[in-house]
Image (cartoon, rainbow, N blue to C red; front, top):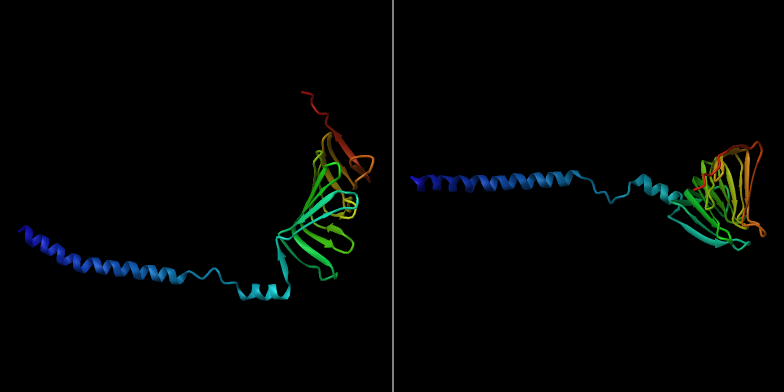
Length: 198
């Protein structure tokens, strides 16, 4: 009796197991066929790249006439159609360091670099942070790579070591006598917050 049950199990297994394997393999091939090849670039992207060449993750390093250094980085840069030697950079970050070691970092979504004038212009939301404790936001800013100066073209909000303020304009200028000269003007409003002594 046991031999009959075992024989029936073996005869059923000879049919069911190969059928199960065929079903599993066919399902695997059907699923694999439906997934597209992600390594292909869509034709629209290829045409856009051919029409407007771009640089991925560009980085530029230099030295200003005052002895400070600067670094410009971006996610993508492409030629500015309005100028011969200009670039439009996306997710741009400009790091400037004065000869005295004070760092200023400027970041924005989009910026323009004029290679002839050595000027970076930001006309979108820009954030400025300095190593001596200033955090600023503005919608327009011009940075000179020649002398490391910075000037806003729109009003700005500032968090400073001594409190917070708003101003119509800001200029940051490297000074030979002082480490860095920061000037706020055009309707400055200051909320003074004294630092606690610990």
